[in-house]
Amino acid sequence: MVNNFGRGCVVGRGSWGRLLLLALIWGSGFLWIKLALRGFTPVQITIVRLLLGAAVLAPIALARRMPVPSGSRTWFHLVVAALLANVVPYTLFGIGQQTIDSNIAGVLNATTPLWTVVIALLAGGEQRVTLGRASGLAAGFAGTVLIFTPWESATDVASWAGLACLAASASYGAGYVYMGRYLTGRNIPPIMLSACQLAAGAAVLALALPFGGLTAPNWSAVPVGSLLVLGTVGTGLAYVLNYRLIGDLGSTAASTTTYLLPVVAVVLGALVLAEPVTLPMLAGMALVLTGITLAQRRAPAAVAPPRTPLATPRENPRGLPE
Image (tube, rainbow, N blue to C red; front, side, top):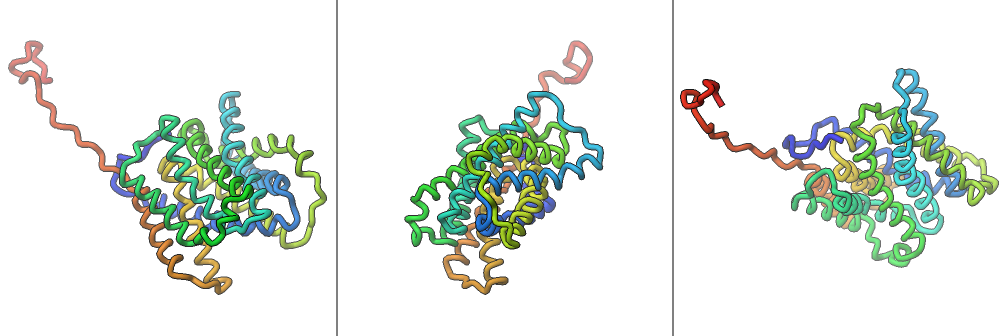
């Protein structure tokens, strides 16, 4: 993977645009999961969104004649990445949201960048975590906590459902690090990479259908429509953006997208549902934006000291300048 930190002063506008778009798509994801649970089990939701995501991306990749990844090692990495970044977290968030509110799940999901930092460091991460970037990660999480004030629902956070969502966030963090190390930057187009990973996840999860996927679903409009949006847009199209961000910014910085998700939820709630915006929400959003700015900032490149020649051209016995 190409490490872009330390090679410039600011993140490019294209990367910021992709980050904001991804946050907008994923910011509504917890709502779609909550609505889809009215008609489907967590395992059913996960396998359908994986299949829909792959169905969206595969025809695009094949139409553009993108090469299908070959080699057992590459497919092994795709299966592992699918487990860490798709199968496990999707299913755990579905299980958790059966009993806790979507905003609590969003708070717990915002711990993903913190898990990413810890796992990247334990695995010999691809970039140095500076004081400024660590402060940004901490500020972003603090802002997320302020937005949703989870201390008013402490029993939900401390429940088994809350622990399931926390474990899902840790799995996301491991997925970011794993994809950044073994899959991005290997001359595989992101669309094909995403399609193959989602298909691999669906194939693996098919083995678990007898343990939670055979319940008769409710085919009413709301859960079916929510699942369609979750699979085609929130899984298929969003994963192309996700891979591109990991390649551009690195795993830790790309995972800070999760800090924007509660901001998107608050703004959409105020504009669409006329939900109240409180002072803690505004303060939290300010902390979130500040934290992302700090976490995305690249350290200035080190300037090599001027080289002192060991000998001048005249002193060089070979007659060549050093």
